[in-house]
Image 1 (tube, rainbow, N blue to C red):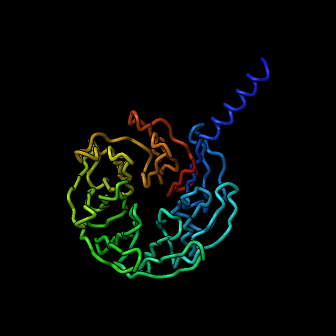
Image 2: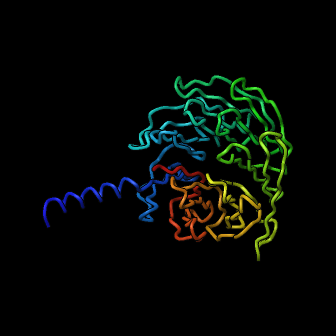
Image 3: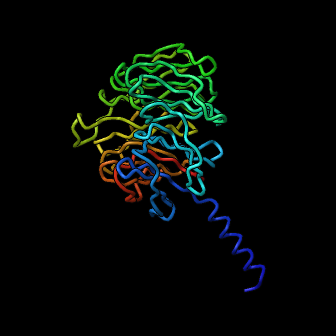
Length: 320
């Protein structure tokens, strides 16, 4: 083989490896994060990180990993390449979930015990505001245009629309009992909200702040009491939405145009949260009770693999 062929082969290997992604999984009971190679389908390692990690997200440039370590009352800043802790953010007590605006300048943290949202400036690493919301806020999301922060209060059964400039609540939408997760459509025109107790999924029109669609789930052979929707994501082209159904051990595939449930995919036990691969060809799920993650091929809507990661996987972040 001549030198040109060898060089071409080396470049191909570099190119192929650079397109692979890494999945980071927070392990609530192991006080660690799992590092997974989803293309190879294997756990690379687990890294001790802090007490009871749950919410986990990457910065928009994918260089910083943020992890809510609830029992340490902070959100950690972690170098996404070395996994070394580079900072701690003043998140308020018992942070569980948080959202980051698309500019990477602000973080919004749900403080469930204090019934408030903490606003953190990511450049100064200081809390710049707190917003009183309903009882037990958990799900939180930022609109694609960075105009709205929406917080879901589980006990008040509302989503609160917070103006990102003034930090004032401008509207409240009454939703089904125990709203858990929120996801904006890529165009920012819809907000998708799950209700754990009612077993439903609501679609809210962002312009009017009103529910326009309500979707219910019925899994053959599974009792209604086990259908508890939690995580929800919508693809960028607004073709499909995917909903984690908790102890039903299924991910519901919802047509985002017709709002019909097309399929239920069997995953691990107590499926909790969901995350797309960067190209949205795969979906990853955390399965808390079976201590694994599932990989779903989205072209075929088929579960292709499960990977054991550690005790009580909770959240996911995917690095290109």
